[in-house]
Length: 259
Image 1: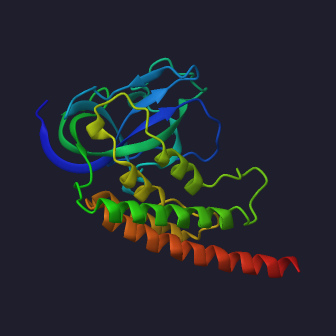
Image 2: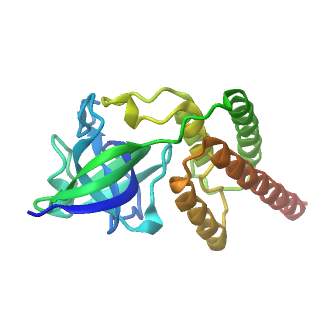
């Protein structure tokens, strides 16, 4: 097959399985993700080549509206043979398999080298530029974390279905971002702490309207292209402060309804 020189920016992720969840999104073209997973026994099967500045990896396509940013998690129902071919030692369902994935970092797809039985391409890591404003970034990271804690403390007070987990998407992503990811790959593929936390803020808030989710999606796509950590942190702070005001207003309405 003749290679195609491309310049997509995307993200790679880890995944675990099996899970049970209804209304799980299915992967579509053309957002590409690098793929790895763990089975129930937590045995890691990873497609990242260790200690390499570029790698030839299987690619899992997604619609651009389902872009997965670093720190974000979601569950997929894989059922097409070309996607199932990526998996080994997987506990299958009657139809396909359920896989929980989390974004780790961004990559740039340089070339497609294979189509069958699944897509495969050459990727290189894509991280933020190294900044000399270390103290300013550290200060902003603390400010963003405090804002996220405040948002989470408000969000968990919102009424939600009984089956919904108390932990929010934001809290889940922030806890992951604060830890050093355990991924068997070149460190060049793993973003810095500040970069991970800057993405953790870009998660849906409980009770978001469709228009709010669409706006968040636009912010995610923009954040994927930003190469300055400080710029993304500032954008995330604005988004979180707006979300805090929105949730506070909803809580005020909720309290009036109770009275």
